[in-house]
Length: 123
Image 1: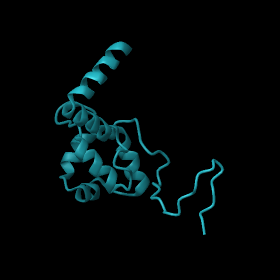
Image 2 (image 1 turned 180 degrees about the vertical axis):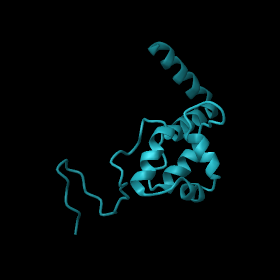
Image 3 (image 1 turned 90 degrees about the vertical axis):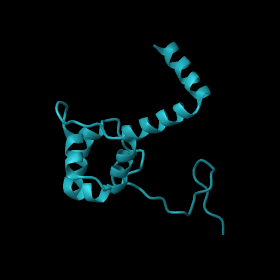
Image 4 (image 1 turned 45 degrees about the vertical axis):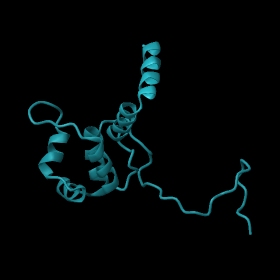
């Protein structure tokens, strides 16, 4: 038996998809601003998140600081691990997406030049 057609004429997949409990697929807010609400929403402590991610709690505390002495910016790898530990898509945080873009641009000179040219035209 064939899967029913969708209203757009495409076949529906019978493969279940993992759906995040968070409404957004990605955030545009920095991880530092988004993380406290996500922890509260999930009833999770910074200590338990640190254990899940495999980092020291003080490292996550420094990420959450606004600025000044001891403040840290999360790496793309840490942002991905935090997202996954919270049951979110790996690219949920902007820092993860930025890291991916930078990695690709550094690895591909032609891509770097296309991005550069486009950004120069737009500015």
